[in-house]
Image 1 (cartoon, rainbow, N blue to C red):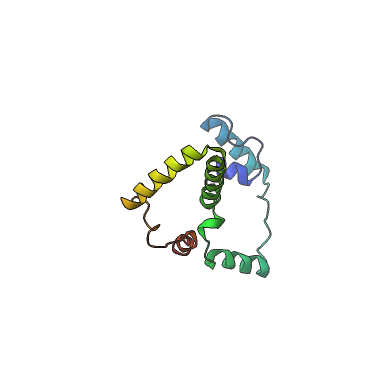
Image 2 (image 1 turned 120 degrees about the vertical axis):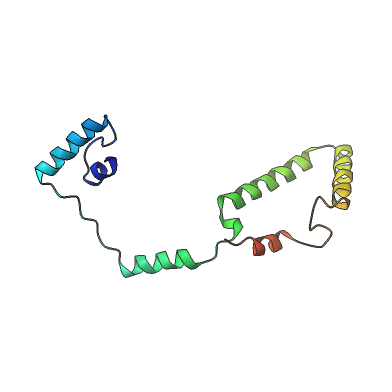
Length: 121
């Protein structure tokens, strides 16, 4: 019911109980007012939509990709701000984690660009 009222541009279509919405709809029908006509898509708009639907999107272009990049920047900034002793400790932990196989891909020479190639949606 709300969708019909919105389509006919009835003020506050979602307000009220069901019987109130039905009364608004009945008044709209009795008024004889037609729903607004929306323009048809142009050929250019249709081609743009087809392009958007068929083009591959890399992970870097998504919100997740942007968030990943932001976290990486924050990690680098944090690493630069800590003491040399803490850096050495962190590097030691990272090395042992890599040796245990937690950081898959580091020892194999895998890069972030390789991840982007795999993560195309």
